[in-house]
Image (cartoon, rainbow over the protein chains, first blue to last red):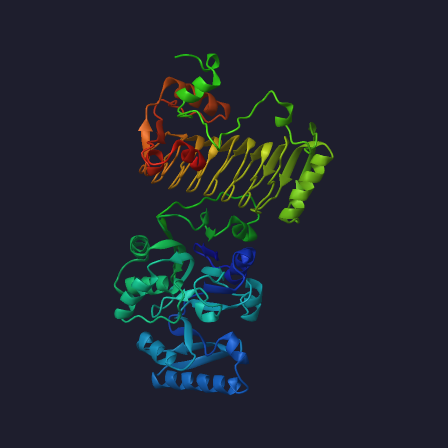
Length: 311
Length: 284
């Protein structure tokens, strides 16, 4: 089933960490397996925020020497960052297996990301000037507190509560997906993609990497492929309705935009609220009401509908 | 035009395209017989007084508590109940099987007023997916928009939305009337079997796909017809019925009803050609 939610403030910052947490907690019944956030702070042109994990949560019980392995992997990641002339300005150990680094880097971030991800068990969850991508097992409140999101200020964000249907219950199959290697682009999805393997093979032939067997990752890769070819976000969302089969509603966030697309069957829900300064959307109205308790006007987008908003 | 009042039930049904043939055979339908007292109320239904009213503030309550409270008030004879602050909660006011006046101040979530048989409901807000699903009788009026699968599989009553509704409206509908002031999405009336739908606005693609029977009236543009859905002539009787029904809810368009398109089943699908009459009844 899965629940998705997103919001964007126009021309101002707000406490998006706590707002997306409230929305996702209201959608907990749509997916209790894992929760993920992609929230956007003030862009910092010079520095990149790199969120990565060096193991899965379940790996922590894999053996007595897991702690040592994790230390060795983190050391290897740092060594590889150094080899690419990336300077680590800040290190944060969020959970035993998840790290948040702020790095300065002038070179090719794709080459850097590919080199770092070659370390065993390592996956970069996000890399960007504004994006912070957090995902872990548990409901929204648990993950939000674990990763300290309640005080996060920013302009927009998207989130996901997952009911695993197509792949495993682990962090690598949790949403949002970063549109590797496109900085600051993240995707959340509710639905099933039926031409996943066909499209995946096509994307792999073009050199894109897949970290999981989750069909939602395809949407992130598909979006990254389009953006890399100079296609606008709106055009990418529109073409996805033609090229991707299945039933899906998905949200894409970039550094300053938030977009939505609904497939031609319109079988996956989305409720939209639009005002002059805030746009909020979620699988169910109850999530929007979690941040806007007053009486509001909302509507369901129709089949093949694509919308993009700017912060 | 012969007045509707002067016709027999069968004549009216035939004129309106509601029934193409008398139903006979193994699965013969038992029609409602108003002269039988037992048909009017369920034996366990509480006797309520519309003059007695009460309010329920649902803000701090969960769905189960709200529904239990509604039943408790009805058992006490309260006939007019107002729900406050529903804030998008799901499955509110479902399964009410007797007459009661229900007013909702705010918006409801999924499956609002599903499985009801008799209540008169007014919702001063929006509803989510599957509002009025399997409704059997009564009247539901929604002042704002509604989500997808609006009135799925309803069997009777009037389900009215003054705004726009989502996709698959009236899917598998078996009777009753759905009235929408705005637009409807794709696959509206998919596999509908009986009943009538009125849309004052536009309809999405595949309207009336695989419909067995029933009638859809659309005031605006139709993006595309579904398989086996065909346009039929809008008769004077249709117009008078449309006018009467829309006027009743204050939804009659300024330009009247002459521009409406009537959509019915073409009955060219395999199940109309290859099956024995008794097998047709099983499907219908």
